[in-house]
Image (cartoon, rainbow, N blue to C red; front, side, top):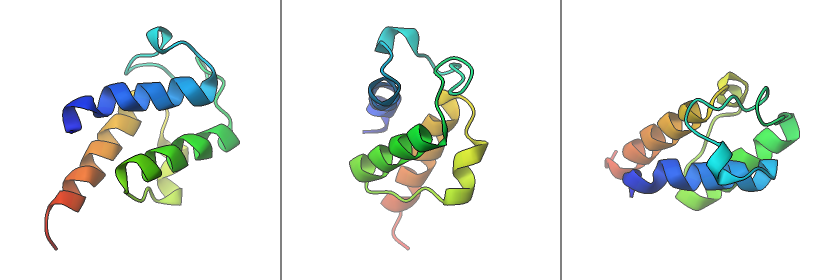
Length: 85
């Protein structure tokens, strides 16, 4: 499942930002390149949380600058979820 996380997150970001997926890569800056504001950032986070059944902390959202950070955080949270507590 983690192999597809990058592609799926790019798809979510593209959908929310109304940008072609081909224009988005791991180094794409959410604000400078895509014009993502705080409301759209929340839309992206909610879509990711629903898709992967994870919870992203509110304080982590403003720290996310590029797409790779979303992918890394999502993969980390998926990994934690998979490990029994």
